[in-house]
Image 1 (tube, rainbow, N blue to C red):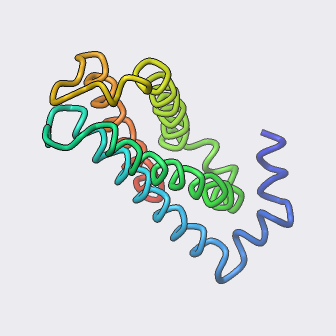
Image 2 (image 1 turned 60 degrees about the vertical axis):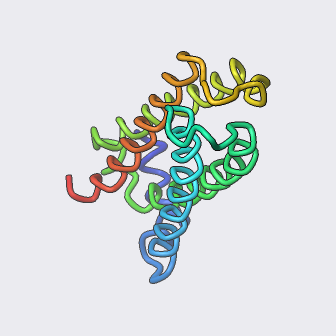
Length: 156
């Protein structure tokens, strides 16, 4: 907790908390990142789950995965900025801790999916293997819950 208190008390934490632009801009960038992440991952996961079977999985993956990664990359510094503004409160928030844990699970799921299935996407026609389908449904569910928890933190 000392490191968290130090971050909040740091010049960066004071800037994130006190600037008229820092926190709102970080929040907007975080939201943009969420849109890119869930938009990219969500469409691909929905396809893998069984909808839009005429859309080729490999082509969707090539188009949407970079958007999802860009979204995650945007969310990291913007999320850190918002965290620094109120680190002690957030570190004690069960919703925030759940959000972090589920982000970890979602990233592990994404990496595991790529390792297990990434080289086979172009071989899939209309059918997706049940294991890949299950991982896609888990991915979509995890990212939607992460987004919901992020929005709910302000109200807890």
